[in-house]
Image (cartoon, rainbow, N blue to C red; front, side, top):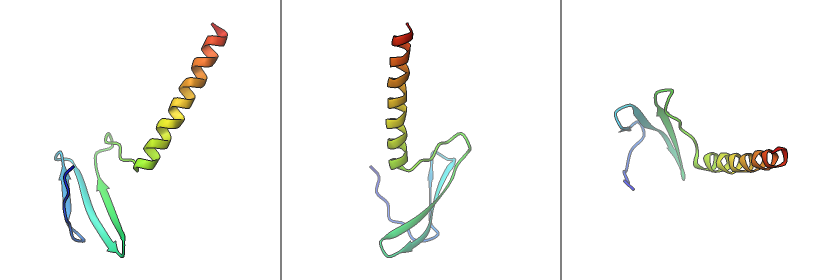
Length: 70
């Protein structure tokens, strides 16, 4: 893991086409902005984890239906 310190308004560039900008720092919260091509998916970790859980449950349900129909 790379750990960097940034101030408000400073940016980080990832792989040449993803720009992360520190928008604001207030108390214990940091506002971050992302600029990336449409093909690059940017998700909060808790949403990505939830989506993976839902996807796995859906796959299991469809597998069960296929076995019942098969």
